[in-house]
Image (cartoon, rainbow, N blue to C red; front, side, top):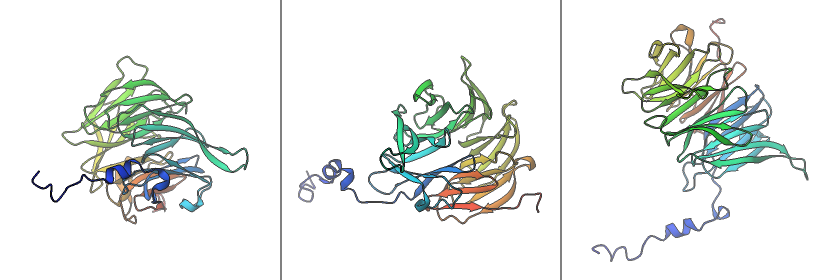
Length: 337
């Protein structure tokens, strides 16, 4: 070969990394915080990943008190083999974690029989997605949940045995970015995709999918169902816009706002008040008012990297970011202004 004298031997780094065990790898902090989920305003799980090393792994921190969610204050910690993508609770001590390898784990906090210290056990483990999982949502009964992924597939799971009861291959024609369940429902959910469509699904039906919104060439990135109005859904898009629709009237927009400077990443309604929190591929966090044409109630840019999740704890907004921080946001309601 022409360059053989300069490169006489193949790169041997591949063999070194291939044969390296976990004990051989240096410790790298999983600083890229990916998701935050709060249960009953008291218990919380925080998921983070290491996205800078050759081996992308993850960590789950479990919190039992209303504190500042610093990693050192976690009641118990566990590691995952691949980067984490999303997580949510089944009850106060059991939760689901989805990974970018396609793995789903059911984890449960319990007491060790010998030391009585809190530990996290894996009660179920499965890998049936063919690519990374992008989103999951738990149905009202806490017995079933739905996942979607980069494999264009949606799966409905029975949580106790971690069995896929329904599987919809090629549910969309592009990456499925988000799913959310209808409040109080055990069978209806909505999905969004980079194919520009939002689809409502009812697993009881033989033809379960109904298109409710189609964007004109703008991929949809996230979705949230309003717990105070079972017909209203908020959708985020690649251009930074947030769209509020009524699922009973397909393609009819209630209100729309270019709320963010970059693609919307997460939206989350307050469970009781008319507040819609959101973040994007930036450090911007906002709270919008769905009853007033998505009027901006609050804006914050304290984070130093992409904000990846927004969660509510009572009337406080919590956000986690790739800058390795969890922030609490206090803002005045419109009644106090």
